[in-house]
Amino acid sequence: MKISARNQIKGTVKTVKEGAVNAVVTICRGNHNPIKADITMEAVKQLGLEEGKECYAVVKATNVMFATSKIEGTSARNQIEGTVVKVQEGAVNGHVTIEDEEGVRISGSITNESIEALGLKEGGKAVAIIKATDVMVAVD
Image 1: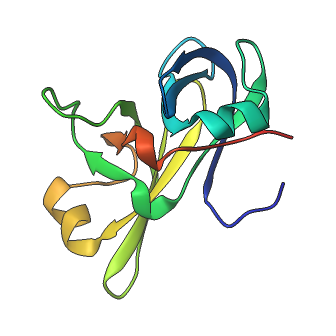
Image 2: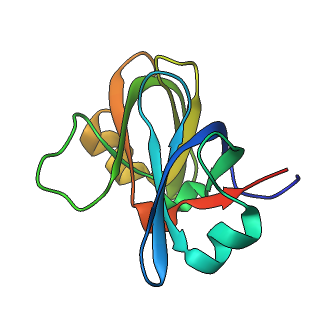
Image 3: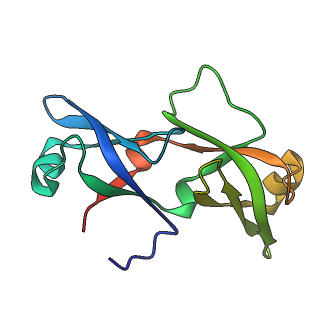
């Protein structure tokens, strides 16, 4: 699988909570920080998603937000804590990459202004925030 999305996180389906049109798929990647994806029931069936199936959570870098700590009272289902391992500023936007305790890296594209306002620096702590509707699911 070759795609342009920066974040391709391998895991295993833990649960599929089916609805009339959509399902919430929980993908485990170790003992911490499961990722939830809100996808159509049609996609669940086409991909053969069921408990224990290996898959990838796929997220474009532009769909990743950052905070300096977890945020309570938000609708975003995915908040992944980690250590900043890379900050690369461009002319207006930059890329930030964190690594969680499982060694999984998540990259996001945010403005240089946000990088500075949040004080994001290599070695610092940050939280990647991703809406479940921004997570795609892929299988081999």
